[in-house]
Image (cartoon, rainbow, N blue to C red):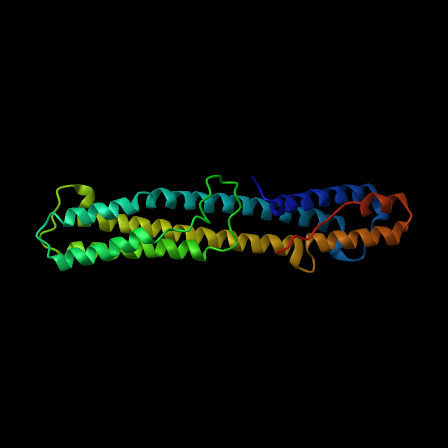
Length: 243
């Protein structure tokens, strides 16, 4: 479900369309000297805002998909790490080598990847921060890499099980790293998309909300504060969310 703020962005754009409909109905009487208030510019601004909203939705869905792919890739990693240690213990590895492997496994078992970014619904808004989750997954990869280095150095570690073999583990690490990086890349993309949306709707001097307020003022100046025309537009609400 979309958050209240995300819904608010769409409501602002919809209300801007209502504003356009009213000023269109005023015909030639609506004739502002300021270029940004002219009808073609209003229509163009609304189209840009719609494009920004659509881009945020698309980037948000992609981000959540990448997060879900990462969740799937990392699932079972802790039990897999334990299997690797158990396999090592059936070799001629020294107690010191096994101890080193167990150290990495303890770190793996003790490090919990953040659940703050585990959406299952592609409509779930992406979070405003990625740092905690990203670091958790980064460390899980590092722990598995450390354990793999211990296995690789042990000449007697030659399991027949394909998924326990060093080459397979290294491929798994590469896949985990790629999926982890994909989340960071997707997060950057959605963050930049939000910035672009906010500039169009709120933060620039010619933003949709600022323009809407100026249109209202212009209608008030042309038709008067008690006119039915101003009554039409003054009640159209535009809100600025906390950004």
